[in-house]
Length: 401
Image (cartoon, rainbow, N blue to C red; front, side, top):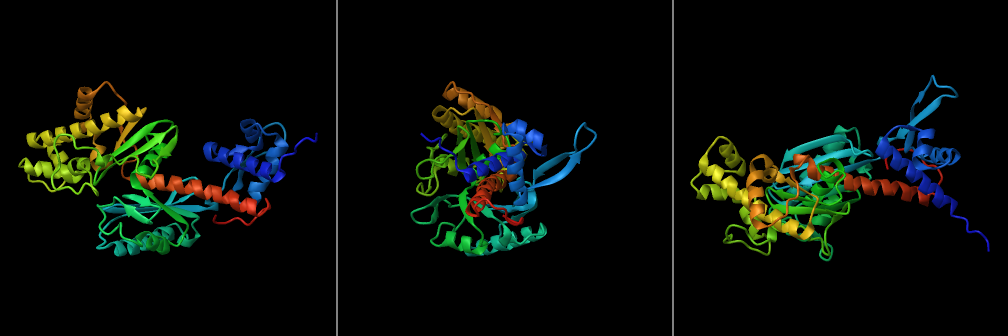
């Protein structure tokens, strides 16, 4: 029998990807460092390095002198070989960032969402994208990929965003196509809370944690799930919609439960503010309730205690099903772990024996944006290799991905 010889082009592509992954994780390295870390021979490293350098993906950044033997060249990823966009569209804010191939932001703006309609919001997102790219000295059209974080779940059958009641008109037919056309670059739309979990995994409290959940309590209530290091969204993308859990501590009246769950109606920022008003506290927002509680107001403290118990009920239910190693609390309400932590723990102790560590989001308001960039980078880096494979492994001009 003849010995089967592997596809040389495939092997070279795999070796090049191995080097790029090393640069992404470890930064600047010499040929010797690369050979030691990857297990490849030095000639193989040199060949793969020449390929990615010719493609503009890697560049020599310096050299080491003073050692016995020849000068040692130091290489690193050319982070400006391509750029991606991350967009976080919420009811109150729109946040947009452009990042290089290392995920470092080269431009970012956060603006109030003052749009009067879904169409107006699409126009404003496009305008913001052009401005942020311009701040970074780029053309938005040069970006390889963009990911949009949005409330709701994209329904692949209808092309509409379901369960996005906090953005009026956001679920209407044709909206997604209009957003794609307005941005004009390859893109996808993902649930904002799922992206917040991806952000925590990439750069926040979830780094190095194989199984965790992010429970977000703010304008809405939702959860992102990471299992065995991978985002879990369920069969139809609806996993983590904890807003539809039965309400803890009383039923919510007048709620359209096909769009907004009881738990969201009572536990969201609007629910906290409404509970405070019903208790006789003249406030307009959940933040004012927490501020009053911090200042010693007994009524506000009672409202915050009740909110902590409701969140504790959600966390207890989730923990009994998923057994996460960590629970991350995010959102404008949820990340107040300093005041919500004790009532959450007391409620969980009443409901069962489960005690996962509970921490506040490490990324705060940037979680969705960081997750969107992380997802976009995963696609953009793969696109680099797809183009290289289509080109038959030959070098091509450096520049935007």
